[in-house]
Image 1 (cartoon, rainbow, N blue to C red):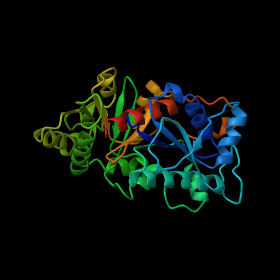
Image 2: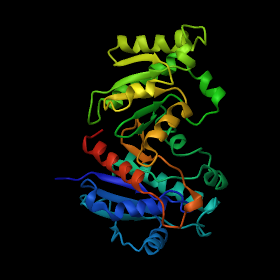
Image 3: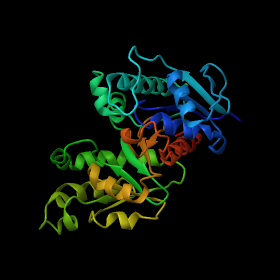
Image 4: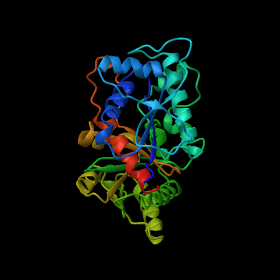
Length: 325
């Protein structure tokens, strides 16, 4: 049986990305059967192995060979300036970007079936002179309809907007944008294990606008989008009051809350699944997941990072890729 090929990046070498990547792949025997390819400079991986006292026994990756179960290394060049632990530097930003660029290229040309990305620093990318705000912004160059979602056993959340100032996010709550999101999300979810999924649309205002007394976005934009999507056969209901919609979905494996902006969705999600939640980008021709945490520069290099979210991201990517999604 051919196993899926899952590309994994080590993220920003100044943060906990290399640690959680190495910890997760060191236990690859407990992960779903797959060919796991780590994209990182060999010296970064070797330094992390020494620090943690583990060995990946990674073999050099040959994309032309039939995929085998195990861990492989796609060695990447190190910049002239060495990476620095616990700091935001241009060298760190360049390393993490080159790894991400390479893993996405591998997925786009069919050499990989799924992508898992460890945390990067947007500030380090900026220091390296890169014109992207992060992973999602880079992917939007190729796939402008991609949707940011968050997964745990008990709660699933999709975002209409993500890394935007709050005033801009509120201004983006429009019928056409929501209808496009519902369509993309439904099509992507329909290819995943566990389907069918149903969408619960959050309101924007307190009490979902209280029939217009506390705001009209629900009447003018959200409800019309929900009704139009439902008329197309998309299983979406709402808008629901944003302070209770997450309780309505909690524990319901088939429910996905459609939140309207970053913190509306992520405060609830991180309270529920901070250590084990997974960020999954849907609407791509390949699965892409990442742990639901950042670089954690303050604990980088100390060996104390919790790798559970990274492990779950790898598991989810392998499961998604096994379905051909």
